[in-house]
Length: 346
Ligand code: UDP
Image 1 (cartoon, protein in one colour):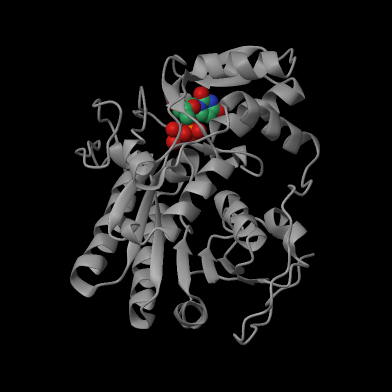
Image 2: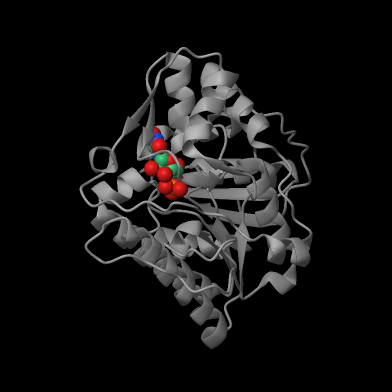
């Protein structure tokens, strides 16, 4: 199969590209490097079944050409990270809404299946735990920037489901819950890479708010395995699935766990939300997925503990870009015309 990954040089996209290549699929990556990085795919540059284009999904003619060349589109290109969302709301809304609209429209013209990456943010302030796919979404007011991300992703879901119902475009939607692992950068606010780097560098570990808020962190390899299984199951079409872990931890305990595991002397400091983000910032006190639907549907369970995942992330930061042990067993080339790489990896 030939798979187009928008955002394929990003954190999740690069892991998905590896997993697809390792099972013999061809991968086309379209990424504008706004939050992704060539570093993430540098170790794949000699794999013959990988081609990549450094460009935006907003480049309609290139998008149309790549959609035409592939069998399936995995749309991961999006504005991510709470810090980025709070600081650049226009970019967030435009990237998420326009980008998805263009991808769905290009896929409809060529009748290609589309996977849409959504987020646990869409559940917003709901207190109905664990979050089930059919639950109501509870978002905050429009003057609080963070909710623009949830609203834009919810609109992406509505649009994708509308394309399926009204125009028979096969779509699959997954809501990722706090995916973590090697190659995730703390630059856009994500807590685990920030804490691991702070602990390794002996700098203060910055817990925002009281630290009593909790999350369930899921290893990226498990998330990617869930995506692949969903794509292989025809009955996933037209449906929404949570992908996440049910191992819940408070941010305060996470800070302590990382500090202890890494034998760090870093102090743990508490930073008020209005200093960390902006005045009036609203955080979610808890976020827990129900994974009953995906377990029932495709037998997916997350299998990597938080403990193990923190080890992998710490190892990554210690030895930047050590390739993960995927094997690229070559399969016969298909008869598709090969597109040229547009840029050489430096
Ligand atoms: N957080 C923190 N310190 C950091 C970054 C984040 O305490 O350096 C907190 C953040 O306020 C939130 C949680 O960690 O309560 C998870 O943040 P992240 O941005 O990773 O994901 P979110 O669940 O908010 O999308």
